[in-house]
Amino acid sequence: MRTCNNKAQLQAFVQQYRKEGLTVAFVPTMGNLHQGHLDLVRKAHKLCDVVIVSIFVNPLQFGPNEDLDAYPRTMAADKEKLFSEGVQLLYAPCVEDIYPQGMEQQTVVSVPDLGDTLCGSSRPGHFDGVTTVVNKLLNIVQPDSAIFGEKDFQQLSIVRKMVDDLCMPVTIVGVATTRDEDGLALSSRNGYLSPEERSIAPLLHQTLNTCREAIACGFDNFLQLESHARMQLLQAGFEPDYFAIRDARTLQTVTEDSEEVAILAAARLGNTRLIDNVRLSLNPVGDWRMLADG
Ligand code: PAF
Image (tube, rainbow, N blue to C red):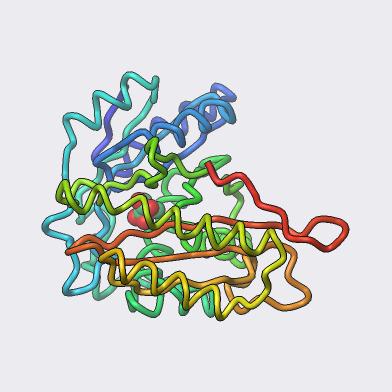
């Protein structure tokens, strides 16, 4: 596995792959890799000849009071994992390689509406930071496909819209959430949980599932379902940020035109903010059907 720390080096390798007629899949990450990331890499191998992974903790997507400094950086262990997965190239730039003029001078890519709701309301500026860095990384790597996890469902929707709106020549591929046996979605932030918090954490997914089952059984008072779920999370010790039943395409309220529903939640457990989601689609006779969520 080759490691490049700057974009000129990386682009020289990509040019060489292209000369050899090879296709390229790209997996952007912030490191501290777990099985969820490795599942993205496995999907990438299925799609293309060469797999490139980036590790870059992007300061532009962290708010002033968020965990940028504490965010786990585990480069040596990450490299070993990527090597074992047969990744051909790791791009691990420093902040100056991505933001040579500094972050204040950086042109920002902002996706309207989709980026303003849910995590966008509680983390102002977060998605502008994500779309700006993803746009830059895609322009640097110029892959055929880029792979993202469905755990960050809002992020995936926003990236898809950016690529579509800006006519970017890349296919965005979503991969189902990887979960621990008790249902907790794998996340780099799970490592912040104390043993007691870790034992409560799977309740987030259970609450999403209970809500999804209720909808699949025909219960259609979504406001009641949302407030019941928030109450359950509060009682279990979470501080819910949102628990929302939304149209999966627009991330706005479900309407009679909605064909797929996403139930999305973000909640704090101690100092750790967890997010998760599950989905349902409308079947041909007009009933909601649960979709596999990994
Ligand atoms: O999902 C992440 O790890 C990050 O938001 C991403 C897509 C790598 C951009 O920094």
